[in-house]
Amino acid sequence: MKGEDIPPLFSHAQTRGNPLFTMKFSRNTENKAVFAVATGKKTFKTAVERNRVRRRVYSAIRAAQLGEIPYSIIFIPNRESLKAPFQEVVLQIKNICRGLRK
Image 1 (cartoon, helix red, strand yellow):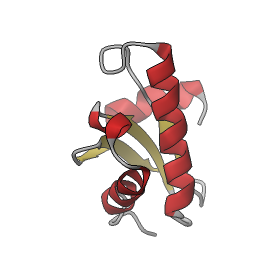
Image 2 (cartoon, rainbow, N blue to C red; image 1 turned 135 degrees about the vertical axis):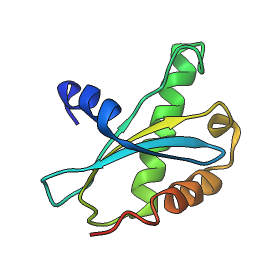
Image 3 (tube, rainbow, N blue to C red; image 1 turned 90 degrees about the vertical axis):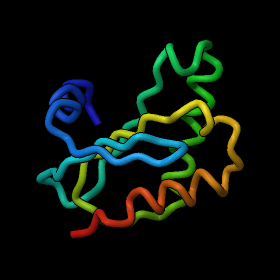
Image 4 (cartoon, rainbow, N blue to C red; image 1 turned 120 degrees about the vertical axis):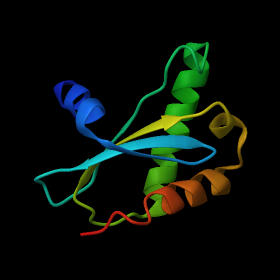
């Protein structure tokens, strides 16, 4: 996802949440999912933590095998997502994306 695509998505998106993430999403014109992970300095104080959680979430998205869903999705991880086991992160991503189908 390009940088200029993110601000409109934040303002016009629907929101879902669970204990590990907040997810903002909206339908896109492409027939594939586009993902971004937003980590803030207020939630993760050091760059090491922000980068670690970003890599973990992208890896969990790949492991979740979400398939062809025509949405632009931004994941905003909570503090607990850094401490949670990897399989729990994958499960929570699958659960939060469950209703997003063609």
